[in-house]
Length: 114
Image (cartoon, rainbow, N blue to C red):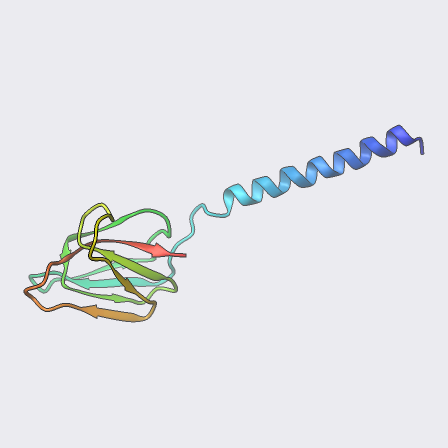
């Protein structure tokens, strides 16, 4: 086999491998969820369940949560604001609950730790 043909073949294999790696890496985060439910109760004692929320983004807890149970496979960070910002956050590990006194501020949103 001539040297030029051999180099082209190696270059083609390398380019194909790089393209495949980029494609897999770019799509790996699409559609990933925190498998399991996040269950919370509102100030009026209504129980709300969010099944397998996406692992990316900020998730609102409307109209706010006074108690939260994390039965997902990932940890959560709870926020007192609707946009997942600000002080006063709480880290809630998987398969744990966070219960607050009725007089405390409600949880308004959460993000996942993955």
